[in-house]
Picture 1 (cartoon, rainbow, N blue to C red):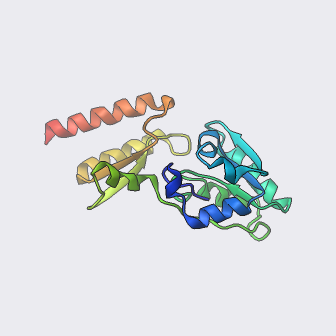
Picture 2: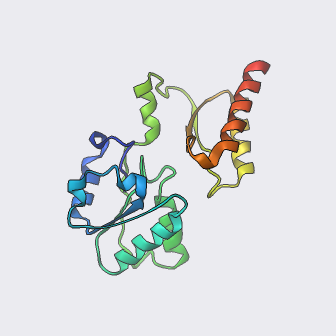
Picture 3: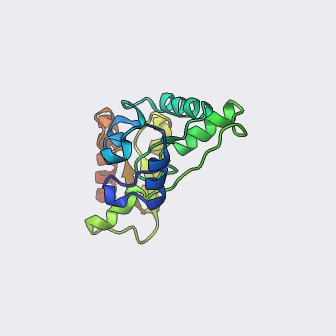
Length: 182
């Protein structure tokens, strides 16, 4: 389920209802910390650090198979660089699609916050994650270069992680080279 871009006022009514109904909440420690503590009262809360995505999904699936209403939380929209795709892959891989009742609850994607900065995404744009945890770095580089050729705006995700120094330096270099070459 989706928490939105981080401010509790951007949590959708449907997401709030799912959190209220849930018995178990599973998520990345930082994202679980964004949830109103009142919504977590009386619930089993399982949070892990960065790079534990597969583990979190497996825990959520296990809890659901135990018959417990479980919320696996993502920031932004769970279908945009969130946990929805990974959960679906794991369910299919383990032939659990018919056994696990689930719903992907959409949320306000973090990229919509561009409007708050006075830079609404009005024309063509690309959403690119710099994280190479699930996508090979070479593929990410090719996508960045393709957007430079197409001259479209970016919404870059995962830009502030301490693990992404090489990626942000690469991005800076690409932008500078693009500006110089016109």
